[in-house]
Amino acid sequence: MTAATTTANGAPQKISLLRVLGPAHVWALGVGIVLVGEFTGWNFAAGKGGTLGAMIALWVCGLLYTAVAMIDSEVTSTVAAAGGQYAQAKHIVGPLMAFNVALYLVFAYTMLEASDAILVGDTMVQFASDMGVTGLTHHSFIVFTVVFLVWLNYRGILATLNFNFVITALAFLSIVILFLSVQPWSQGAVLKLGEMVTKENALPYGWLGVIAAMQFGIWYYLGIEGTTQAAEEVRSPARSLPLGTMTGMITLLIAATMTWYVCASLLPWQYLGQTVYPLYDAAKATGSWQLQYLLFVGTVLAGVASANGCINDAARAWFSMGRDRYLPAWFAAVHPTYRTPYRALIFLLPVALAFALIADINQAITFSILSGVLHYTFMSINVIMFRNKWPLGTIRRGYVHPFHPIPAYILLLLCIVTFFAIFLGYGTQLIAMVAFYAIVSVWFHFYRYQYVRRGAQFTMPWPKPVGY
Image (cartoon, rainbow, N blue to C red):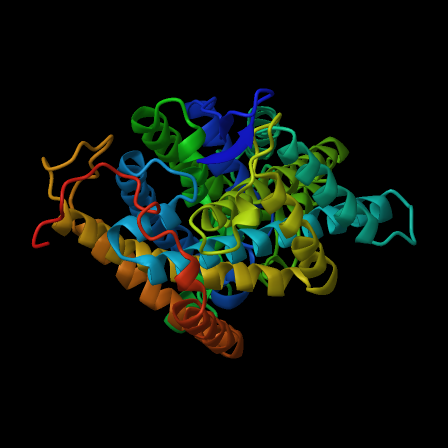
């Protein structure tokens, strides 16, 4: 939480992250990261499972992330520290799990940031081509987007998330306007409701296709758990974190349903399953240049908002590891003026740029999803251990999620199904990533852990766990 400097008279001074955020900022961080999934990524589920398969994936993954949001709201409102699930893991499970969870977070957000930048660049090039301008490439747009947003994060979290709140709200509004403009209540006026779900396009690959679609159904919601990364900078964690997270989840469920309904009605499922910008293409299919322009702006804003939130979250996970000496302490520095983890921000900048400039959007999305699902698997185990070690009534909780342990078991089951879905399409990448995490775990255990501040890393004033 703090970094030491000296005052003019030589006395030590501690510089900490600022507690300046409220529920609206938490909503902006969570929804801002995720809303881009409505503009790209989810639609690949239609290519795997057809239009009906994509809808089933939408709601099954919505159930998964509702469990994620409830679990996160309870544990994070109790462990209100930067690093989110990393801070939870080190207090509840142990250092090795905490190290892996932090890496899951950094890779998930950095890969998502890269895919966002690719989307912004590709959308700019496509729109320019539609307007008759040719010869552009996405590279300059990618570099400008990432560098500008890192600079914005460097300058302070309050301005960063105020900016995110505005552009996220505008991107969400563009989905609502498109939905209302195509008169969804009137068959045949614009939407082809009779052609939306037929024998040919509903489940073209059967129920195996539905399972395969789960991989990209996650993209509707991937990143909502990022609200926890701001826990140390929220004024009232017990109120703001649950309220911002659960409100964000409701927003995403509404946006996802409207997005699927419009796109599945206007676009053939084969095309929907491979386009990079489904909402923009749906707007073009209406024949309205006003809607086309609106969804172009909405797509760019959603990509920028998501990348902005990812930069914020990845840097705080990296910063937290530096503060506990899981990584060199150099990364734990807090800027004396802007009170941001500026070294972590700067270090991750070239990493994100490298992936954005080298990988394609499918690869970036897949690697983000892989790390995300590994992280969600941990969360289901984490909350069960949390309740067992510190039952209700032993420590103060800001929020208590209902129906425990059912959400944890549902989350674990859906993670197993999603791993199988990923294996069907990206088995090699899944095995390679699991092998990577195994190798760095060995490195941490035998080399890096000797530098960890073993006592200082446990900051919560909790009683001894049950059975200790």
